[in-house]
Image (cartoon, rainbow, N blue to C red):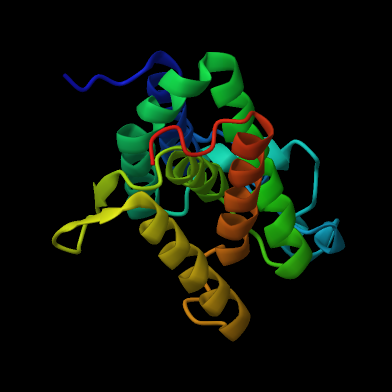
Length: 198
């Protein structure tokens, strides 16, 4: 029987609480910038936005809108428990936060706009899953049928690269996705957990 694991459950709860607080109950609007990642070039610049290192972590728990939040949390809910059970809570947290931070750095280095969201971390979890269980079949939300995890992962990476370099769908942090995915893949390789079930 499927059950959500403790770390995944607590991350989802924290994401929802931060989203609700930032979007509906933030007592001082200027505090919102602490939950958005901004390039250092904006320090004391447009609309008072500025860069602070804490944004690499706090921006992972904020999302642009409810659809953005739900999409990321559904991905974490369905794939995260499998990954957490293999890695254990401590390594799962390391994977999640490392992928999110590396994704944010990648996005900042290539695209100088602001960004929010857990997408880098979610892609790290997705690629970790696909690296450990490459042939396990998954269902995509809007596409009928089941496909091996490795093909879904490769497809999403190729779409991200194409979109990032062509500017297609440029309101999405494509390079955060790529950075998180690379981090997730490398950590699974480092831990010697690739192809647990091929």
